[in-house]
Amino acid sequence: MSAESARTIALPSGEEIAALGQGTWYLGEDPARREQEIAALRLGVDLGMTVVDTAEMYGDGAAEELVGEALRGRREEVFLVSKVLPGHADRKGTVAACEGSLRRLRTERLDLYLLHWRGRWPLEETLAGFTDLMEAEKIRYWGVSNLDVTDMAELTTLPNGDAAALDQVLYNLSRRGIEWDLLPWCREAGVTVMAYSPIEQGRLLKGDALGAVARAVGATPAQVALAWVLEQGVAAIPRSGSSDHVRENRGAVDLRLPTEALDALDEAFPPPSGPTALDML
Image (tube, rainbow, N blue to C red; front, side, top):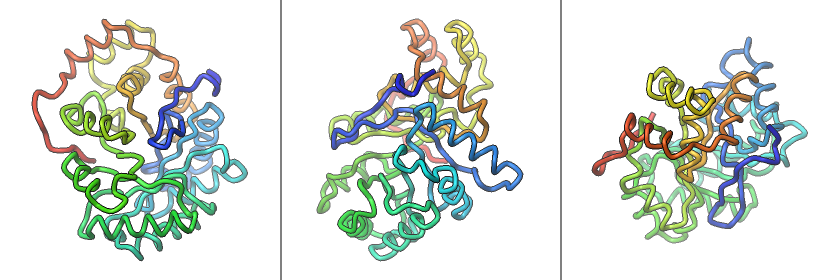
């Protein structure tokens, strides 16, 4: 289980990042778990899960503060992602929100900054803020989250709108709607896709079908669910607050699902038969 064997996925720039990273939704909210969560994040970096995703929304900044502490002295090892809330996403607000995130994360720059979801501010406003941040070298790339295919198509019509690096969306075995239109669109446009909640916040793990496949391939249900996402050419950022779960998640990187396992998963979790509204959590 070495870091060197980690799968990667390419950004539009050609830069390769870890395909399996670490999410932080709900981390940093329980002081009794703080040291455990910090240790888990650090272990994940040790194991090559070097994409760390957070947001100003998570715990009202508490997750960013936790990440900042966990990455002290290790910032250069990590591809760091955060997000601006829609209510802050006008031009000046985007810049101010990013500066707040940088302070909490104890860093001078983000590798990727995302609009968390679409809100009342026009996309042009948010893009202008992203441009200001890039010119100030406070972010390296920008992208979006929870934007569906019509939103992405609109984005590309705006000045510099075709420079989006990534769309982070809800995607897992039980949430396959993006396969109908958004995922093909992103592939054609060269936009990387990243899955949040790739095991449906643990709910997927209770299913008999997933358990049967896991037993057949000698893995855990979580490893199968994560490996399946990676097989689709989609990055994944499972959250884990314990070192044991981090090690389990990391095992998905080395798991290659045989055809019969993929067929069984398709039967239990059918792909979409038509367009569906983008799922969100």
